[in-house]
Length: 300
Image (cartoon, rainbow, N blue to C red):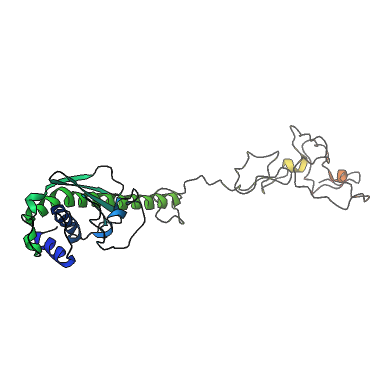
């Protein structure tokens, strides 16, 4: 917070040249900003430019040309401790008053203060800066109350909102990387957010192949493919109730079956049809492995 002593110290250190009483009042406003940690980036004609707040400039400047424009003063500041946003201060002389308007970068509502120059400034007071002002403590109090305190609150809120927005973005990105709920490590999900297809178990056959890994198993095929078989297993004799017909292709080989040729093509004795299953036989009898070959045929 600016104080009367700090304001006089800033003025004495800079030793500005005053031409009018309004110069003194405007410089006292400037000194209040400097005393509270603000850095000056532009003043005079450059500070009156339309893009004074949007132009990128982090360099500090001196006070050259600060009172070149008659009855008008402008300053552009930033406060490194309050963030990177700039602040534009304009002072306009109207009758016996100095009208002060302050707008922060990105803001829409300026802060306003009216100062009666004759209430705070001594005319023809010599070169002693202390004697050129009167009621300087009251002037500083008004600047603190109507401008600096409100401005600091606005800048702090803006900085806090930016910090909160950044934290929210970080949380959102972290949540986006998570695979499942309540997962701290996105690469080690405890509860995946997707359904893991089961891997087909036992069953299936070369005649009716089961699905590959990652696919849901079917409800079975004609005859199944279990490793547990008995003398009457249909795979030895075919389905006793019905036999699927497969148009085209090799006899007894459905489309899509994993069928390996029994021998080289067009070689006598290795015709695929010779190895097809015989029609179903009547019930009873011995297991085919225990029966003798009949009529010279091979039963598979």
